[in-house]
Image (tube, rainbow, N blue to C red):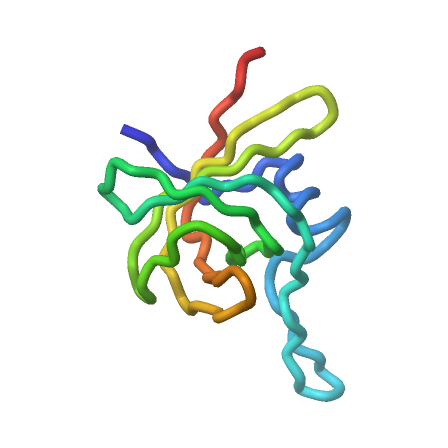
Length: 130
């Protein structure tokens, strides 16, 4: 059984949040406006499936933030479907697979490929041994 954790290791924090970035939206005391969480245009191979399913679908991330991911290609799950998804990250010579759990929050019609956005509610690292 895969145990997922909300703790953020430094390499993943640096990758997703940027060096010195803040993972939470901030409210300006001057204007009262809430800033949007930064999205990073990372194109990574991703595999995903509805929670409990045995078949994986494949796609490509379009962007990733501290709270979610936008995925293009492959089968598009329904809004509110719980998801398991995995993608690989490299920091220096170290490679890890990030195993995540989340849910689909919206779908995007596109030409030629559809896309969907999903939350990242929990994640853990699975070390890849070469």
